[in-house]
Length: 267
Image (cartoon, rainbow, N blue to C red; front, side):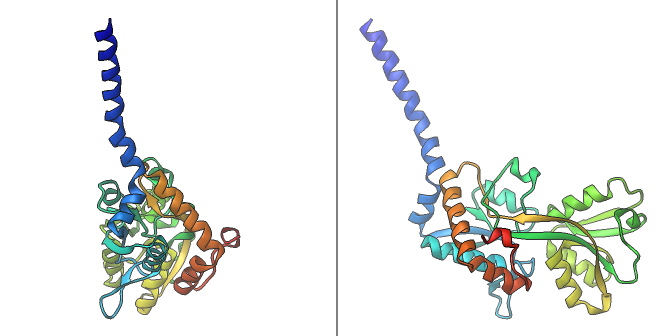
């Protein structure tokens, strides 16, 4: 009897010990970043004005400024992990990045696999075309092709909008830069993208005379996190609250988008 009880106790203890590493792993993301002395942030540096390279090949943009502010407040260095719209989530889930700050809109599809911080911005998603094109609704795109970056919210919304439209073609490119180049070089005339991207392509290519024709949706923007990192999410949520209230996140938004965040976000 004594041996049986002892054996059971040892087995129970062994089972509890086996659970400890997983529990510790779930709780240690924030501590691991602090001990490492830097945070790995996934940013798409080919997606102006969110991420881009300046004349000295240095990273800049609203996402870069946001990541720098977060790292500073956390008291660690910043390492930018370059990503595209399509591989932001895989890089996060594989551990190549601790968080995602890459014009990361909140969608129901992404919620199934990743967690989000509280929103700190908004991203309108539009369809832009030459001024001469008569496009007022998705049905007007019948027989036309539309360029979009794969895996972005623009891709999601465009797919929904054109599903019932016969003869409309979606041409997907692997990243924002390639998509924008396709429009700039005349391979594509119509673009689905975030409003800021559409405006950037318009300004860089005045001869194309692009104009926003349809606003498909407006997404809240947040920091992307792994579901197994609740302590890190709690810290980032608090950081978002603090920097919305003190105006620092609004300053970044105004700098790159020329307008303030919605009033309900800053109060």
